[in-house]
Length: 352
Image 1 (cartoon, rainbow, N blue to C red):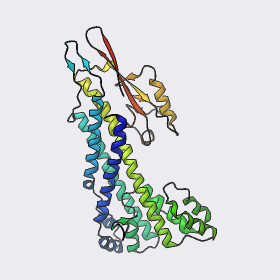
Image 2 (spheres, helix red, strand yellow):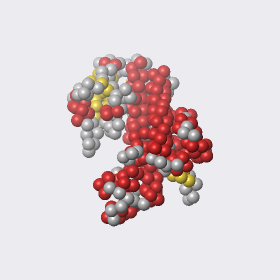
Image 3 (cartoon, rainbow, N blue to C red):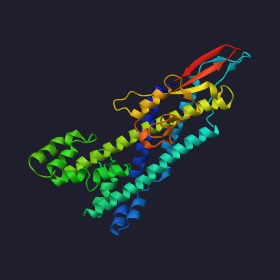
Image 4 (tube, one colour):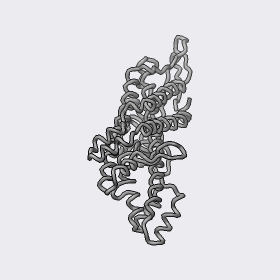
């Protein structure tokens, strides 16, 4: 399976696994327990009652592992069929139980789930505290966090569960979307209309309130914010799907090449790599420069690319690189391998 096929197949799977985990957590919420703890001022207890635990994301970790393994197999299958000097066929293989491969995927999935759960606890605390500080009663505050039950779907809609702490602040914070719609300030209300994740079906209601010089009706704001929260949750799932798939695929492709070197089927000095810039609408200048570094001859497989800010990357989406070099990056890595077979005859092949 090609890299393009893998990039099309696995992000939706991983995003769906994330959403399903969040939905399961929402479904298990006992609203009464959260309300009782908020009434006592027990914010930590209310956060714990949501049961946002690492174990809930087992399916997400499994989907990520499947993408990783598929990427490794796809990489070795893309290598050309070669004949060794003794006439035997060189068999390129990817070991899914390779120790380094196991470490890579275990570290990636563990880091992902840890980041999700730790940030979620911060987001829940922020939302509970903000609701009570704004004078909302414990029941209303709890519903703002866990979402309100839909009579149509039978599921909770809206709420902050699954959102990042930044998204919670962006929607429910002191200067968030909800506060702007309730402010009655035309300039602030128009800022809501600039949000890419808003539900445009509510724009008329917001514009009408602006023309009439008043705040948006509180009940309408509730509907608007629930849809905004749902759309941000969808966006987060899609972002996780894309970013984690890219990290897994580029990590395992590099590992698959190294497995062939480790087995003696190719030599490290026969492998070079070329950074391929995506040509996106909003290109990273530093990544254009990385592509220029290796355009002609490539660089040795064991040598990192060095960005203008000093960041060293072994490949696009290197998990050790800072977020500014990873999030939204669509660059690729191309490996060139020189094979020596049948004495002085030299084969040149490209794995893309």
